[in-house]
Length: 497
Ligand code: GLN
Image (cartoon, rainbow, N blue to C red; front, side):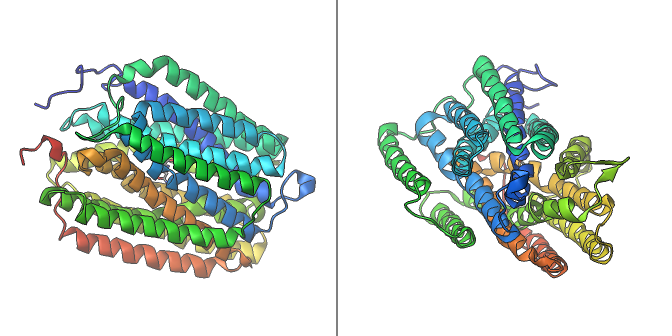
């Protein structure tokens, strides 16, 4: 039998008590994140008279892409800071505080504070998101079979938070005033911070200290961090003062190249210079496959916050019983379905395992890509209906989101726990950052794709969706084939070699 965690703790649904702390913190953080995600593009594209920024959709999608990409990109330094300087627990707290501040800044109705708020939320999320995800894994000892279901429960918190965000921030933002929506996200985060501070002790020593190797010294890393932070602050501050400006679409492209460069650089570094043994290299190869699948998947998925969101607002009949629901309410379909289906998926994987029909993680990812492709296939019909009749019924988006969600469940919780299990021990925080780097690259690509999808109104959508389908199917097939050549083994820390 497997040894259980720190204290054989089964306090919360058979899981360690610390999972409650992480559950609630992540729930509030995701409420604020998805509340914003739902409102962002709508707010930017509405006319000034409706309280919006009156940006054209193409620019708005690019800004959305830059924001999404930055949020997840900052998970890489966020993971590094935790590994090398503060430890995950403290880094999560700093992140949570910065996010809260960001949302309150966003609540101030001014164009400049809007961008400053986005920067703060991005930094805070970068510090919080990868590290809270790593701490989940550290609540369990290597080999503890509860880790997968721990991540499934954690994934539910993400989606409960996301539902709350779309409903509360979405309603307030769209129906009362945009900045009320942004402010509500700040209130949610405040609950999250208070709760985290009060219950942090239950995390024990999971993520308490940086994971330095012998001879490494956190103070030299702190100097690097301080220099980086000062340069970053100067850049943001000078932009805030209007010293320099940049075209959002160009920035979106630039960011995609930058992320691609970082990803390639990091994987090359891991293979060649990180002093990994053969088994660890095998694991990195598998994580590379997951990275590729994840990029394609989320680039499609992120259309939900941008092009599909705008489609919901302007080309979908949102009336139910004479009441026009906020477009953001349609976004609830995804997290709601995740919460409903996640336990079934978890049970399904366990069942397959019991029958020795276990799927490898890349195979699950391939299924995720295929399901995402089916979702877009359905959406093409929805767009055609809207082109013929001005508005389409909600069923098209709902069906699309159903398939996107089924795909997500094959890929996202699985990807999180695979990253926790297969990463070499001393790179765990950073590898979680790399997992989110795939979301970052995806968000940047999604911004470019979404801009393209509105180049000549929604009639550009079917062609684009066809391309996305082809790319998804191609990557799915590549994953299936490459999986045959990759050898990975979980929890090497525990294994004898
Ligand atoms: N929905 C998940 C979350 O919010 C995954 C997002 C992502 O990795 N792009 O954590």
